[in-house]
Length: 421
Image (tube, rainbow, N blue to C red; front, side, top):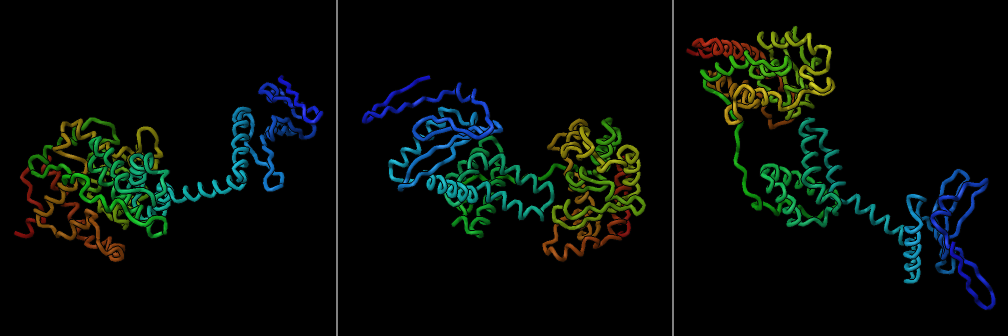
């Protein structure tokens, strides 16, 4: 222990320098007591053993105190540095207590105006009208590509060059389309910030032409009848797990989006009425979608019902039954069968059905409705989900029969085409 004697006008003042060992060994007493560390810094030891640092100082003729934190989170050295910082503020004619309060207000204001805070607020308000997959994908794109570099910045201070620098990171890793998507999302966030009074302009709009354009890529699909027949035979002979094999067999029969297929729930499927009703929250356009089930589709579902019928999902994950299978399951199965991503994709079953059904002469509007392609008028879409349903039921059964015929190698004449001759 170091003792310093200071003689001032014959008055001896003894100052004891507090040590870390003394602090660690300080035991609680029946009543709260203090240990002085000098120059206004002291440690309070409570009866329950808690230890709090405080700094005492004088400002404007009044004695004031500030909390510095708790020990051992704040060490003796750190507390001493804080004390010296406060003393320096006082010597500059400022009140540390007031300055700390203003600093907290400033930080809170910046936090509420930060790009991440505004983006999460925007996402929370608007994602209720999106599909679950779109909502998740949008937030992940922000978390992985924007927040690490822009998240803490005041949204009104972000410039176009700063945003472009972030997008270049995405582009440079070969994800040009994602870079464009991230810019679109950021633009929506900036416009929301403008509307809510937290930003003055949208820097994303200033980046028009700053990124190379993306090439439109259509989902690879097989549309030649002979090759479709070969694909159907390969699907029939697929030797994967029951869940994967069933998802693969059902894909061409109902041609819904892969994300919709993997999230199919038994509660949505009515085998007796040969119908699968997808709720609005699962659909891209946020309206109910009806999928008439052909006899072949029902047979496929009944085959897997004993396996997953007690679960929530028709196609649960192989890791946990509380989640659906991976979105890449059907694509992975196609790769195992020898089909490259340039030849056939899970999404390609939709293009396959659309191409052939249109060639066969089915009502174009009925085909579009069955593909769940968006109705621009949202109110009309909400009421028209069952539009052309009798024709769609006939079309879906004819389509399943057509696929069976191709798989057997027969020269198939579709019913609807025959009706037109």
